[in-house]
Image 1 (cartoon, rainbow over the protein chains, first blue to last red):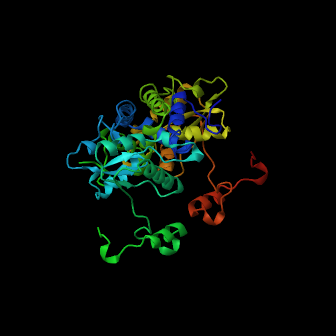
Image 2: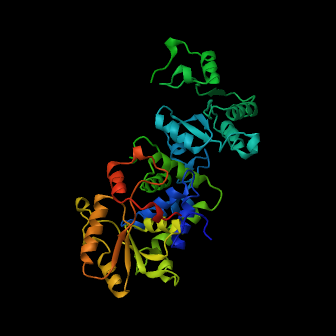
Image 3: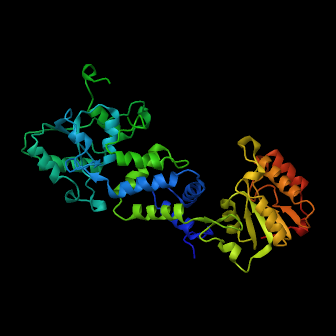
Length: 211
Length: 211
């Protein structure tokens, strides 16, 4: 009996590869089959390269002991970079967010990856996130400003609120990234919460920084 | 310097994995990044399972020495199955087509995978395909009928024509799968060639087999 009722595999090896591939997000069984047949029919060493890369990912990928971003070493490139301002920490939910902000080339501080946001519905509490290590960093490194760059949502706001409470009493500026209508976005399609906030947090025209 | 101008990787391991993953068809760099970050963040042994499956694919997957379908052994399950009619061979372009036909559960013969179709534009000639082994099989196994199930196209028709010429003089029935308007298809959207053929090859209503 095959896992895929409507797929007849002549080979268990093919079937296993399709099963493993379709365990990836957004890869359905038809896509998985196409990818696996592509690799099986490939004359190059594409499969070997993929195996090697995945093995390195599985075995050697580390988490930066300072900021919890993915890293090849115990401390990541960003944390080790002497030109980075260690007193300015940008707090993000995941390593993907670090990459997104790095791609803007607008930030010269360091990061702190929380590993998620507080979400009671999903059973994620503050103790499941890297919040205590953030507090230690703030105290030890004499951090001047925390830029909260968690995704705008109820959970994100809860997380920011929680962290601000935990850090209460420490001399520190806490800011959040600006929220508002996206560049190129149409006002009529912006949701009420975003539009309402963008009016509430309006910026003096002459002080607006233009990139 | 990174391969992806607009992606800043903090980790070479991550970058290598994204490069290897995006070498797969229809997987762009953003999708590859999402898949790799999913694997990196996965708490289960999903990556290990994928590596194992790909290693088996790379090392152990064989080609059936008789029909050239993918197989775990020297001879595939279908060719070894004693209940299969070895005198009825369905000729297909690729192993994917075998799977598609097997899924219909309408065919009880065996297959022959050509490994492509004759395509002068792409530099694929008859000698690049498993045609000579088909001729040997036809002669050795006293095959009664060849069902040509290559995809309907100019190249497919050329391939069928070539094979029929090569087998000229051998007492053998050669048929092609019926071509016509797909079940559930709208006449107005069928292309002229398909519709023209479906009229030309019209079937006596009382003789039509209903599944």
